[in-house]
Length: 301
Ligand code: NDP
Image 1: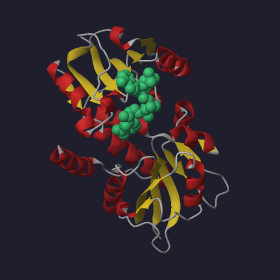
Image 2: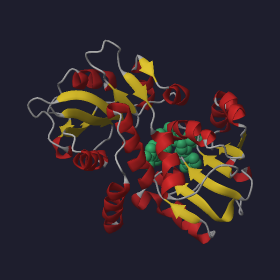
Image 3: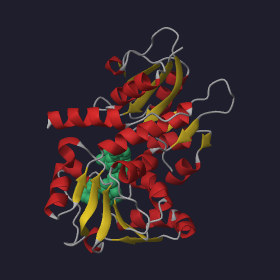
Image 4: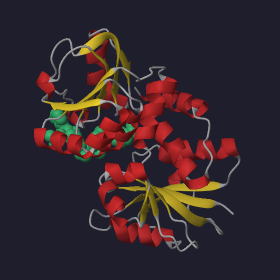
């Protein structure tokens, strides 16, 4: 029997998740149907409940993602994207440690029939870390890391970034109070891993970082957070969580500084692979999927 999965967000039409999961399913030989569902802004929970109960109304399901509703498919879980990760966190009966700390859930396993309730996980940070360390080949241990942003994506990334034991991790955000709150929430974790965790205004973030991760949505507005010259060590890694045309200004900026630019496509594929571990206990190999998506994104310009 096929496992029925979905990405639920608003908007969701742009999501590449169906393509990614279809590739994983083919590679692992596991029958999966994966669709996009656009939930109304005030109707996230009702949408997930309906989907988990086995139904998805034709009105909001994008069947191009993989043909939902095939006879016999059973809702197994879902991904959650903007702007519902916080609502998903609040709705889950059980949370993984990393989701609990992030206060955001991007993966739900329904675990129907077990009586245990929905399990909420956050695979964003693990996906980011795997992309940085395995795909880009940059080990974070002992490094200086600058995390730009203090929204859901930054919160999701922190657990994994701290677990990689950089020497220093600075959070820099436009709204200082949000960065401070995030640092306070993760203070004990940072201490446990021996990481100096601090906050700064973007323009006073410091210099010579080995890795800069842009977890802001500034790129969507074709903006760059204001950063000091010298913020990146020469040859450092500059990763924007966005990909496609939106990421270009940040990646161009990184190139001009002699840094290694990297977009968020690898993170996207890796967080999806990590979701398979949550759903099925098996991790798909990501190389072929990432290469195929890279070709598509590059071809689209
Ligand atoms: P949120 O809305 O929760 O947070 C947005 C963050 O961006 C805040 O820190 C906000 O600062 C900051 N920001 C927004 N506009 C500007 C600006 N013009 N200048 C400086 N800072 C700005 O969004 P998320 O954290 O959920 O997502 C952030 C980005 O990460 C999105 O673009 C998303 O697509 C991407 N992402 C990519 C993933 C992947 O797999 N590749 C996974 C998850 C997210 P302030 O607090 O001051 O408002």
